[in-house]
Length: 479
Image 1 (cartoon, one colour):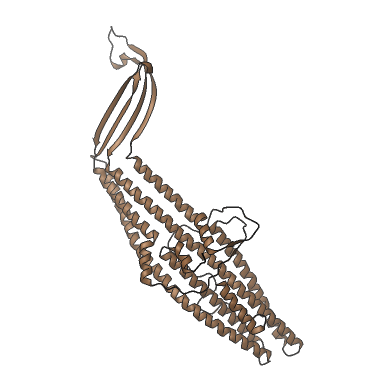
Image 2: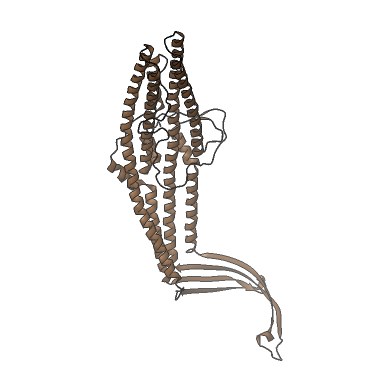
């Protein structure tokens, strides 16, 4: 995009003044595309992806950064990716906890006992029997084991935890999708601001050339002093716009650096340009791909299955459970005179009355299930809306780019004629200043529409769930 804007600016500058002719703008453009950041489709509620974990040490040299490199850094250091990966680890731990309820529990211990009893306290008071027995002691080394043979609620909880782990992994994939979108939009905004800065710089050069020409003509007595003042005001206005735009570039680079985890204070430059290239994709294919690939949609469906298993688990609390437990060890007055002993117990436990807890658990889990099913249907409709919106924006902004390009050509011709009329003494430079402002507005509208078109491509790639592969493909990024 910057290369195309720069070429247009240079051509117009040479055509009008022999040195450069891109003029300023003192007010907002009248076109439909506003000045400022491109309209970005907010795909779905998610973690704020503006943060990162800075990595590395800042070097004194300026780092050259392509959009592909920025995306890869974002996928490695962005806080959204890291946080969602932590959520995967938490879900994995929860599954292991559910599995542990079905695995054997084995533990052991060594004890030393010493005991003395008062038989009278137990009602044993006979003349021939001592009232105090002991002290006596024994040693015991023993291993204990417990195994759940059948427990339907635990089995269903394990399957629910397994589905939740799958959903967490899909959500982590969706985080990569959103990080790619956030980084791409930040990169796009910076190169758009750079393109605006280059256009404004050309307008500053034009305003300076017109100011110097007006000054020379005043010395020659061919124009009034007011024309010089107007030209100087326009020149200073363009310089002020240029300073503000350069500041905007630096702030945009800070946002990008935070999103991709660059070392604090690292200076970098952006090397990619994004010229206008149409995208030939059909809406039906895009919608089909979105339903098949969107990680958040597949995660929501997986969460529904997890909720279904949770309902089964709550209902299964009425079922009996079978548990086997036993122990084996050596016991004796000392280990040298000990003997092996063991015990083995198998039993069936079934609930009779739980105070309404099981019914409450079933109702609660069924409510969660209904909520997740509704969320899936809502997400399906939102996916349709996001894809269609991005597709409509893509078509609209593609047409706006062509219209804005034509408007910029017409505004350039208007400025050429106004300059010639002023040079011939037919009119004062009010007409020239107005033509400068018109051209500046047209150029800014062209930059904004080109920026919005590329932003719509990023939004579309995110909406169909393939931002990581789709953004480089849609924007024709260099490998």
